Image 1 (tube, rainbow, N blue to C red):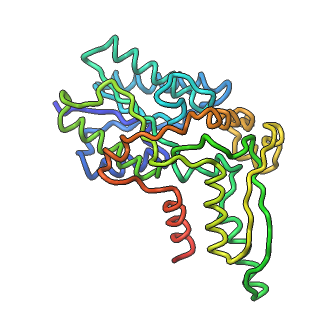
Image 2: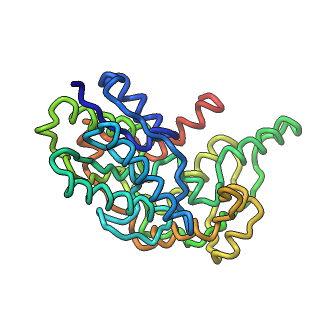
Length: 307
């Protein structure tokens, strides 16, 4: 019988990247893909974990012998606790997989992949600020006025964090997808000799950048694209002031519930160093240096505006 494995979750940007790379590495008939949109914050945290359990139980019932679970790289160096509410359901699911690994051995095994906070997700941690917003506005102004640069301006990013160390070991999303796919392929090639059975791996990026350093990259790219002397800085505010910014609640509302304040726990986790752990695993699995933060953002801008 062909061995079946489960990829969970298999939807979204990262899940899609994993499946894309897997499609060129192993037969599609070997995969069972589980996709859902978990609610992982505040009172939804427990519901998210319960939904994860149901998906896992369904996979086991279908005959899956090994689950690869895509978790998140909060909770420090493979810690079992986190201040980030977004991580709570993941930790509960990890604990459930570990329990199953103990009670159902050797018929069931698992691998947990704590995927690094990816470059492309930075707007979540910069109050949803994106350099494209400024570039588009200035480009439009230049078109109307037929004038060059020279204008000065300061953009304040209001978040409940001062931007200082410790920071985040950011990782490129497609690098994470490729590495995850290669780990799955390792298992398919030799399940009995697979080195990551019933293990948790941290796939974090090659360098820690503080939020101030992230914002400095954004400022640099805006200046290069526009020729304007634009300043982009973080202004630390209270959780209440952050959550009351008009643009924030619509982007952090799930099933009609505004979770802006709950999301703010992510900055406390960053402040505690939960995301500042550099692991060599991503580089080792890829067989090359992972892509750096600025490189990813430059590529994104080139795709939108050209070279």
